Image: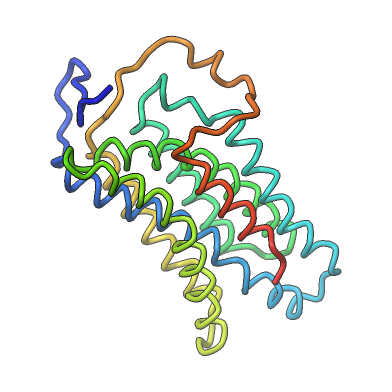
Length: 234
Protein backbone atom coordinates (compact mmCIF):
# COMPACT_ATOMS: atom_id res chain seq x y z
CA UNK A 1 0.00 0.00 0.00
CA UNK A 2 1.18 3.51 -0.80
CA UNK A 3 -1.59 5.18 1.19
CA UNK A 4 -0.59 6.79 4.48
CA UNK A 5 -3.66 5.40 6.21
CA UNK A 6 -6.05 2.56 5.52
CA UNK A 7 -9.75 2.48 6.22
CA UNK A 8 -10.73 -0.50 8.34
CA UNK A 9 -14.48 -0.37 7.81
CA UNK A 10 -15.15 1.16 11.23
CA UNK A 11 -14.42 4.42 12.93
CA UNK A 12 -11.34 4.60 15.10
CA UNK A 13 -9.92 7.92 16.25
CA UNK A 14 -6.43 8.49 14.95
CA UNK A 15 -3.84 11.21 14.94
CA UNK A 16 -2.65 12.80 11.66
CA UNK A 17 -0.03 10.80 9.79
CA UNK A 18 2.69 13.34 10.53
CA UNK A 19 2.02 13.13 14.25
CA UNK A 20 1.90 9.36 13.97
CA UNK A 21 5.28 9.35 12.25
CA UNK A 22 6.86 11.39 15.05
CA UNK A 23 5.24 9.29 17.77
CA UNK A 24 6.09 5.92 16.26
CA UNK A 25 9.66 7.10 15.67
CA UNK A 26 9.89 8.02 19.34
CA UNK A 27 8.40 4.66 20.35
CA UNK A 28 10.96 2.84 18.20
CA UNK A 29 13.81 4.74 19.86
CA UNK A 30 12.28 4.03 23.29
CA UNK A 31 12.25 0.28 22.60
CA UNK A 32 15.96 0.43 21.80
CA UNK A 33 16.70 2.66 24.80
CA UNK A 34 15.12 -0.05 26.96
CA UNK A 35 17.20 -2.69 25.17
CA UNK A 36 20.41 -0.78 25.88
CA UNK A 37 19.62 0.03 29.52
CA UNK A 38 20.51 -3.41 31.00
CA UNK A 39 24.04 -3.32 29.52
CA UNK A 40 25.64 -1.26 32.33
CA UNK A 41 23.23 -2.49 35.02
CA UNK A 42 23.59 -6.27 34.75
CA UNK A 43 27.27 -6.30 35.82
CA UNK A 44 26.26 -4.21 38.85
CA UNK A 45 23.56 -6.74 39.69
CA UNK A 46 26.25 -9.40 39.44
CA UNK A 47 28.50 -7.56 41.87
CA UNK A 48 25.75 -6.78 44.37
CA UNK A 49 23.85 -10.06 44.23
CA UNK A 50 26.90 -12.29 43.90
CA UNK A 51 25.66 -14.64 41.19
CA UNK A 52 28.19 -16.51 39.02
CA UNK A 53 29.62 -14.92 35.88
CA UNK A 54 28.05 -17.53 33.62
CA UNK A 55 24.59 -16.33 34.68
CA UNK A 56 25.50 -12.81 33.58
CA UNK A 57 26.55 -14.21 30.20
CA UNK A 58 23.27 -16.11 30.07
CA UNK A 59 21.30 -12.94 30.82
CA UNK A 60 22.90 -11.27 27.79
CA UNK A 61 22.69 -14.33 25.57
CA UNK A 62 19.02 -15.18 26.08
CA UNK A 63 18.06 -11.72 24.88
CA UNK A 64 19.84 -12.26 21.57
CA UNK A 65 18.25 -15.68 21.11
CA UNK A 66 14.75 -14.41 21.96
CA UNK A 67 15.24 -11.45 19.60
CA UNK A 68 16.32 -13.68 16.73
CA UNK A 69 13.50 -16.19 17.22
CA UNK A 70 10.95 -13.40 17.53
CA UNK A 71 12.06 -11.75 14.29
CA UNK A 72 12.08 -15.07 12.44
CA UNK A 73 8.59 -16.00 13.66
CA UNK A 74 6.79 -12.65 13.96
CA UNK A 75 8.76 -10.63 11.40
CA UNK A 76 6.09 -10.56 8.69
CA UNK A 77 3.00 -10.88 10.89
CA UNK A 78 2.16 -7.17 10.72
CA UNK A 79 1.78 -7.49 6.94
CA UNK A 80 -1.26 -9.66 7.64
CA UNK A 81 -2.84 -8.36 10.87
CA UNK A 82 -1.82 -4.71 10.53
CA UNK A 83 0.97 -2.57 11.94
CA UNK A 84 -0.98 -1.18 14.88
CA UNK A 85 -1.97 -4.49 16.54
CA UNK A 86 1.59 -5.77 16.48
CA UNK A 87 2.98 -2.43 17.69
CA UNK A 88 0.56 -2.53 20.63
CA UNK A 89 1.53 -6.14 21.36
CA UNK A 90 5.25 -5.35 21.22
CA UNK A 91 5.00 -2.30 23.47
CA UNK A 92 2.73 -4.15 25.88
CA UNK A 93 5.23 -6.99 26.10
CA UNK A 94 8.03 -4.46 26.58
CA UNK A 95 6.05 -3.01 29.48
CA UNK A 96 5.84 -6.47 31.05
CA UNK A 97 9.61 -6.86 30.79
CA UNK A 98 10.20 -3.45 32.40
CA UNK A 99 7.92 -4.37 35.29
CA UNK A 100 9.75 -7.68 35.76
CA UNK A 101 13.05 -5.78 35.83
CA UNK A 102 11.61 -3.29 38.32
CA UNK A 103 10.45 -5.93 40.79
CA UNK A 104 13.00 -8.70 40.07
CA UNK A 105 14.12 -10.34 43.35
CA UNK A 106 16.79 -12.56 41.81
CA UNK A 107 18.91 -13.14 38.72
CA UNK A 108 16.42 -15.72 37.50
CA UNK A 109 13.81 -13.00 37.10
CA UNK A 110 16.34 -10.78 35.32
CA UNK A 111 16.80 -13.58 32.80
CA UNK A 112 13.02 -13.88 32.39
CA UNK A 113 12.85 -10.12 31.81
CA UNK A 114 15.56 -10.35 29.16
CA UNK A 115 13.72 -13.12 27.32
CA UNK A 116 10.48 -11.13 27.31
CA UNK A 117 12.39 -8.03 26.22
CA UNK A 118 13.99 -9.91 23.34
CA UNK A 119 10.60 -11.10 22.10
CA UNK A 120 9.18 -7.58 22.41
CA UNK A 121 12.08 -5.99 20.52
CA UNK A 122 11.82 -8.58 17.77
CA UNK A 123 8.09 -7.97 17.41
CA UNK A 124 8.68 -4.23 17.34
CA UNK A 125 11.50 -4.39 14.80
CA UNK A 126 9.20 -5.16 11.90
CA UNK A 127 6.02 -3.30 12.81
CA UNK A 128 7.50 -0.07 14.16
CA UNK A 129 10.16 0.36 11.48
CA UNK A 130 7.67 -0.40 8.69
CA UNK A 131 5.13 2.02 10.18
CA UNK A 132 7.78 4.75 10.42
CA UNK A 133 8.54 4.44 6.70
CA UNK A 134 4.85 4.31 5.75
CA UNK A 135 3.82 7.25 7.95
CA UNK A 136 6.66 9.50 6.80
CA UNK A 137 5.49 12.59 4.88
CA UNK A 138 4.83 11.78 1.22
CA UNK A 139 7.56 14.15 0.03
CA UNK A 140 10.06 12.91 2.63
CA UNK A 141 9.93 9.13 2.48
CA UNK A 142 13.71 9.01 2.78
CA UNK A 143 13.29 10.52 6.23
CA UNK A 144 11.40 7.41 7.35
CA UNK A 145 14.14 5.12 6.06
CA UNK A 146 16.77 7.34 7.70
CA UNK A 147 14.93 7.19 11.03
CA UNK A 148 14.70 3.40 10.82
CA UNK A 149 18.43 3.24 10.22
CA UNK A 150 19.50 5.70 12.92
CA UNK A 151 17.06 4.73 15.68
CA UNK A 152 18.78 1.44 16.64
CA UNK A 153 22.22 2.90 17.23
CA UNK A 154 20.84 6.04 18.85
CA UNK A 155 18.46 4.12 21.10
CA UNK A 156 21.02 1.60 22.30
CA UNK A 157 23.59 4.32 22.97
CA UNK A 158 21.11 6.52 24.83
CA UNK A 159 19.87 3.57 26.88
CA UNK A 160 23.35 2.52 27.96
CA UNK A 161 24.37 6.12 28.71
CA UNK A 162 21.15 6.85 30.60
CA UNK A 163 21.43 3.73 32.77
CA UNK A 164 25.18 4.17 33.23
CA UNK A 165 24.87 7.74 34.48
CA UNK A 166 22.14 6.78 36.93
CA UNK A 167 24.18 3.82 38.12
CA UNK A 168 27.01 6.25 38.81
CA UNK A 169 25.09 9.00 40.55
CA UNK A 170 21.61 7.85 41.65
CA UNK A 171 20.97 6.36 45.09
CA UNK A 172 18.70 3.65 43.69
CA UNK A 173 19.52 3.49 39.96
CA UNK A 174 17.55 0.31 39.29
CA UNK A 175 14.25 1.74 40.49
CA UNK A 176 14.78 5.02 38.64
CA UNK A 177 15.80 3.41 35.33
CA UNK A 178 13.02 0.85 35.23
CA UNK A 179 10.35 3.21 36.53
CA UNK A 180 11.21 5.83 33.90
CA UNK A 181 11.12 3.18 31.18
CA UNK A 182 7.79 1.85 32.49
CA UNK A 183 6.28 5.33 32.18
CA UNK A 184 7.78 5.87 28.72
CA UNK A 185 6.50 2.49 27.53
CA UNK A 186 3.01 3.16 28.88
CA UNK A 187 2.95 6.50 27.06
CA UNK A 188 4.14 4.84 23.84
CA UNK A 189 1.52 2.09 24.08
CA UNK A 190 -1.30 4.58 24.62
CA UNK A 191 -0.09 6.73 21.73
CA UNK A 192 0.09 3.79 19.32
CA UNK A 193 -3.60 3.11 19.97
CA UNK A 194 -4.30 6.25 17.95
CA UNK A 195 -1.76 5.81 15.16
CA UNK A 196 -3.30 5.43 11.68
CA UNK A 197 -3.17 1.93 10.25
CA UNK A 198 -1.07 1.77 7.10
CA UNK A 199 -1.83 -1.68 5.69
CA UNK A 200 -4.94 -3.66 4.88
CA UNK A 201 -5.35 -6.97 6.65
CA UNK A 202 -4.90 -10.00 4.48
CA UNK A 203 -5.07 -13.77 5.00
CA UNK A 204 -2.05 -15.88 5.80
CA UNK A 205 -1.24 -14.68 9.32
CA UNK A 206 -0.75 -18.19 10.68
CA UNK A 207 1.35 -19.27 7.70
CA UNK A 208 3.52 -16.16 8.14
CA UNK A 209 4.66 -17.51 11.52
CA UNK A 210 6.75 -20.15 9.78
CA UNK A 211 10.36 -19.01 10.30
CA UNK A 212 12.13 -17.62 7.26
CA UNK A 213 15.84 -16.86 7.29
CA UNK A 214 15.54 -13.40 5.74
CA UNK A 215 14.94 -9.83 6.88
CA UNK A 216 13.10 -6.99 5.16
CA UNK A 217 15.50 -4.24 4.18
CA UNK A 218 13.88 -1.68 6.48
CA UNK A 219 14.50 -3.73 9.64
CA UNK A 220 18.03 -5.00 9.00
CA UNK A 221 19.67 -2.06 10.70
CA UNK A 222 17.44 -2.42 13.76
CA UNK A 223 18.12 -6.14 13.99
CA UNK A 224 21.89 -5.85 13.54
CA UNK A 225 22.24 -3.04 16.07
CA UNK A 226 19.94 -4.73 18.60
CA UNK A 227 21.65 -8.10 18.34
CA UNK A 228 25.24 -6.83 18.38
CA UNK A 229 24.80 -3.99 20.83
CA UNK A 230 22.66 -5.75 23.39
CA UNK A 231 24.50 -9.05 23.26
CA UNK A 232 27.87 -7.47 23.96
CA UNK A 233 29.00 -7.95 27.48
CA UNK A 234 30.31 -4.78 29.05
